[in-house]
Length: 123
Image 1 (cartoon, rainbow, N blue to C red):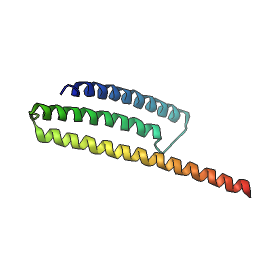
Image 2 (image 1 turned 120 degrees about the horizontal axis):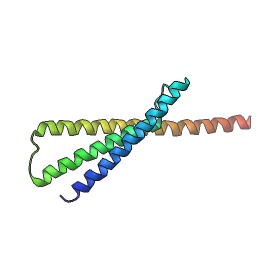
Image 3 (image 1 turned 60 degrees about the vertical axis):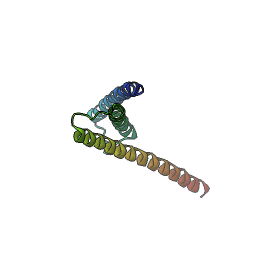
């Protein structure tokens, strides 16, 4: 299909953006460790970078699978291709799930903090 090549190009660009953001987060983390600041909990930005990276890989796998199906040709080793695609999709889903859970927890905790502040303001 004609749209698989642009999809592959877009996923490559997203992959490169994810790599650049991961390197930025890594250098930031190293600077904090050098200053002696320690954070045990992974930040939302770290999870977003990983999700972006894995999402780009999932898009690449999807475009390759669609290309093979549209041509009516099987990849050289179809079981390896399907296993790798399934693994990437599962990892992307898990990473995206962790990111959504973190965002939801952040929202709930911020609402809780504001409601707690309102109670203390009244009393």
